[in-house]
Amino acid sequence: MSASAMNTSVRNNLNLLSKRDRLKNRLGGFNREEKTEYNLPKATTKQLNQIRKRLKEERKVRMLKVIALTAILFMGLVYVFLQSAKGITELLTY
Image 1: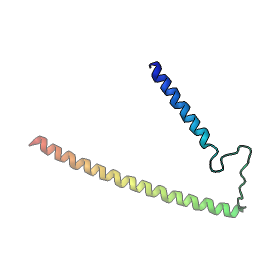
Image 2: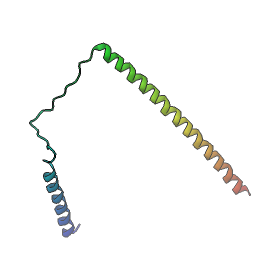
Image 3: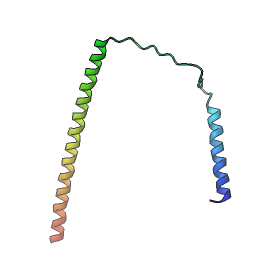
Image 4: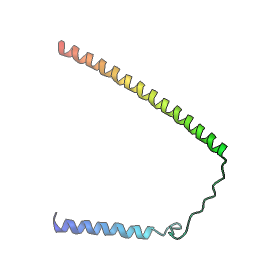
């Protein structure tokens, strides 16, 4: 690596740093000393169990859909491969 390429790389990196510093305090910025407060609703154990059951059911349905779609696509690819292999063998044996 030549010295001019190294200088260019360092200059470009410094330009990126200065842009980051200028944009840091825009739109309210970010203050490390300020803590974010969340107003989370209280949930009973019954509600949490219902949420857990619903999420498990949704995950199961999603996984079944993914498996079914994967199987269908795999079967389609196998079909296309077999058809193309049959066509290739016909061309080779002609």
